[in-house]
Length: 138
Image (cartoon, rainbow, N blue to C red; front, side):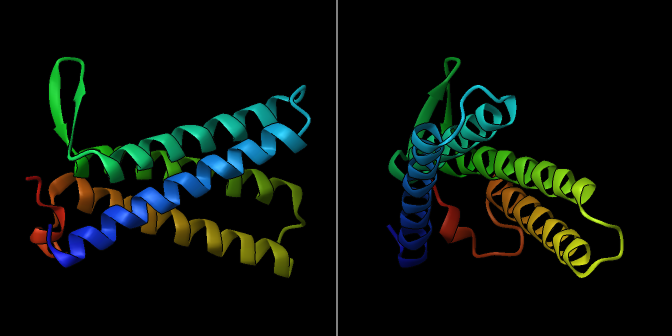
């Protein structure tokens, strides 16, 4: 495994475990009677599990078809992007328009959504702008 590929895969594994841990903290400390807590916990758990799978498995069998780890990672990051965008937009509704907090939340939402969408695309295609060796499936 190349050096860059190993770093990316370890990042997915570590990030996935951290996300699953965060979901677990919401389960322990959150009010599970509210739909928003259940949705947030479920979203974090799905993202974490998918990223752990991408980081620890070279290939995954999905519906009888073998999928390489970059595609699995792309799905996890895309789910993360959609959730970040939805969470950011939901927070914008609570804030007063044109306040500093509103502008910061809007900027962070757009940045996170754009970055995660770009990186998911890079993973899905095997590296258009990033080194192709980083996304090699052995």
